[in-house]
Length: 169
Ligand code: AMP
Image (cartoon, rainbow, N blue to C red; front, top):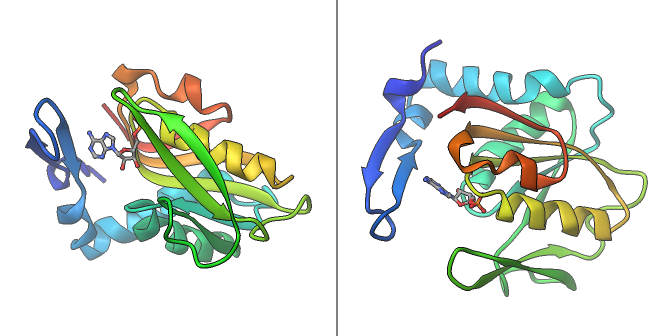
């Protein structure tokens, strides 16, 4: 299925110089949505995945559906100050400045095998921070799955675990 007509390029959003990959046209197409969830999950069946970690914000749209497809649970990794319980913090570098991701400190155990899910892989810093949080809780990261890999940015090499994607630019 050709998904590229359903990905809208929005120049200079949210900042000048960024070509934003808007996935909302894809999400509103029932056949494309089903295909994307199946294709995100496909390489990760029979891998003993117990939990799917979704990264705020757009990872939250995809990760719970992937978790259902894999018979796994869903764990949110959130921006700072959003989680109600005790949380681990992971700062990470952006092109300009720093950001932070958090996970509940009782979200995972050493018995968990995790798939990380997000919409877009760009430089890989966000996904790498999620890998660090999962690893700090003693769980194992099996892989990270993305709807879109912006391969020209080389992010996959930075994530630190195997990367799969549905669309590559
Ligand atoms: P990075 O840490 O550079 O890999 O950036 C990945 C995060 O930023 C993901 O959570 C994406 O949702 C978001 N992101 C980065 N670049 C884009 C883009 N061109 N279009 C849409 N989202 C993006």
